[in-house]
Length: 214
Image 1: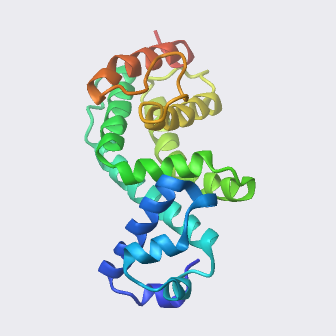
Image 2: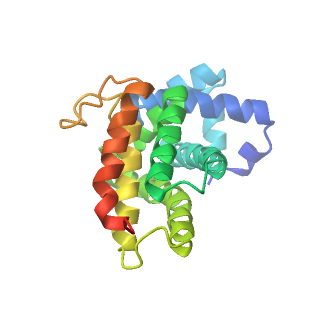
């Protein structure tokens, strides 16, 4: 947790530090990210930055959690506006399309997603991924239960398998179009949001036998 000094800062000052940290960690990751670079962009001495956070790991973990919280809240808002009367498969395509659009429009959040997912330090990666995954699950698990309760998902569908695959696909769709070497099958790298849509539909259709009622 940040120190009490952090929470006494005004919102604009906190946002400046968080944005600087997002840019630095999103570009260089935790291991090679620089506190001095973050402090320089935030226009504060590094010694002052360390009054807010005890060390680099604490700052990285805080920023990851803060980013994931904001992303989750925005996706909950977007998902809540989708048509629930359409077939589950079409609705799921819409969810992933909303996700791909959000990621395309938010490069800082995308960079932090990559930083947490691909961090080389296993201890830091485990800490951050556990927190990150909980935010994903707060979106995935309730929406799957909602569709199951509506009878739109097979009663014998394995919820753990569906949740795991959805979690993996969220992360894949977020990163594969922007980082070379992640997707060697579907060719997502370099694709625009519009070009990603048929691939998203193909991925969701491939999951169909796991949940389809018909």
